[in-house]
Image (cartoon, rainbow, N blue to C red):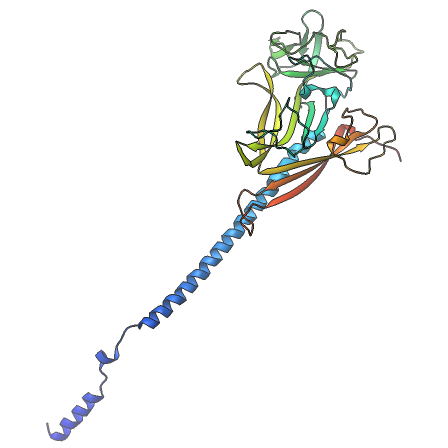
Length: 380
């Protein structure tokens, strides 16, 4: 190789890039910028996720409030709408039930009114008192008592009012000893506690004894006649008998009472629910009748009830809804200011703390119920 070729080769080698000297990694500044950009992207994704999750949680809680309110209004409205319902429509009701003090139990006192309201400070200790313990009624909230008969009524074939004090039904029944029953024809009715239940002619539970027994039931006597004053134990004979052609049809049905109120859940006074107390035989197969409490809807904070009345003589409706304390007579046939409709104002609260300030959200919902058996035509 001559000198010219040597110089050319050296020049070519000097012009070839040196890979080792031109290759290099990220600098610290580039790495920090990359990390910041990544964190911003991750933070944005997390923010979207949290916001979406919070919105979904809020919507779920509000939807649950709406569903709970709809369920509460449906059950309460059905009870209130049917206040005073009985299979025969008779208004004269004899009551032979007496408590230990000799008075008619408040939850069976049909003649006092089949719909009775209690304002926020009016106590009803005989059913559920105002207090601070589990299921106790919350002070400042309203309550309402509804009395009616159940839907599973039975037809009475015959009635022995003198010897056996027994109703014979046309079909089998599910009545148990000490159940509270309502018997009626088109002329009058009677409320009593079942003394014995037996069967016959291939039927089960079709023989219902209404005899009084001071050791086992609350019946003050065997008689079922309507008389005045209604607080006096009946003393005259009343035969509910379908065997005579001129006698109206006789029906026997269970007595139903419901006491609606807002109460505490456990001993935590921050938790409240809507409760209903109803007639129940104590324990499994128990013989004592009590008003047992069932939780209907959770997270109900308040219940306020107002009433619309009507003049029983002129048929004119009142111009304003009033509190329970303004109703002077709850009797079904009161002619001065008969209650014909009920307005329910429920305050429900979300289960979770989903507001902007991390507190539960409350909603007021209102429902109006007209009493079915008091909806009569009034000519203009």
